[in-house]
Length: 334
Figure: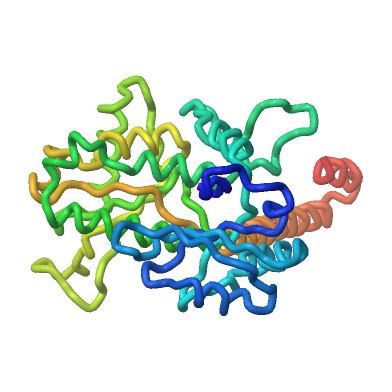
């Protein structure tokens, strides 16, 4: 939460204009570390959230002497240069209690499963609907990955530790603003060594059909990660126990996650003590953009080759029938 209400009274607007909210602070962080990180901006005071043991809870409010310092701090956060105790932290503008409540209501808006996820930049000027931003989508997908309390009690200690470690890694990755959770790509952990890519595809398709019998799931890509230096009994690279599955749409991906995640009897070699751990994969926006550029360049090269081949065939044909030259040219231009 980034609302300023920690002193029991609503903070004045003048203090709100010179305050930022920090997320992702390390547990051992102290106020001196925050002051050192924002020394050039001129820190007035720091209010750090602590637990019962006196350790940092990962969040803090930082008040600057001048309102202009807020923009400098936000710039550092966007560039990933806001580092406290060796860890990059998220910097956001502090909100009043009323503004935070309005933002919470916007976050709780549920987008129907069969509708595509839209970035706020894609909203049209005459569109009055509330579109979710990437941080809002990440929060919603994180809630989807959580196991309900009633089912988590039957989870083994090893699986619980793996889930906690995975969630910590995801939260740490999302501090980088260039990274976000994919809503169509899943990472499945705890895969038995006998599960290969073909079995992974079959398992995920059956899970979708079991959760939504009327659906027609389409898997775009699936891959089990392997260790090239370690071979199994058949001489093939040994599985690393996890794999990626990419679906054509969000509805199939979330159906697979809801059906398989922590399933006590998933089959395909899973056991009661080692259940599937399914999560939305973290994607780097820079890598995605580079991949899209490569695909566009490849399509342009193929299109250029096809056009050259058609014109070459045309000129070879016209060389023997020059009277049909203009008709053939019109056909190529069309």
